[in-house]
Length: 177
Image (cartoon, rainbow, N blue to C red; front, side):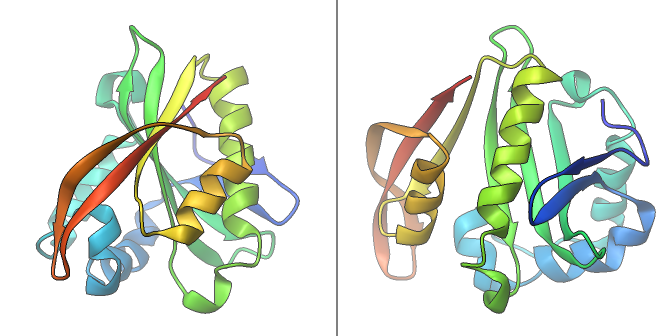
């Protein structure tokens, strides 16, 4: 479990545990319809629900089966969030999702750095065997990001996600640690 005050450092950014003071940040990010398409969100989140998420991070991640970390610059500016979800303690695997919220921060290497930090943490500290993610096949930036840190495509689910533009395929990627 990540405890308060523990920082995972990279070249460009660091990952840190959620803090109660992050509520306004999470509220803004989770309620931004421009990112709902990649997060599977259909409705806004209440402050109460987000406070419960922060509270749940106090427990063992193998019990809660999720972990959200804040991605921030070394100067402390929050850039986004990185999630481990569907953590499976028996099979030692977890899903991964990442958000760099501001468009101007994307393409600057923060997501790559954050994923590299997470991969090392998942391997050495959590003892996970593999990470996986699902990416819509028309999301070129995310496909390149995950391929760039070693994830490999293992299949495509056809017409998996419904969007305003129609049905979209989703590629599944894995990284064996």
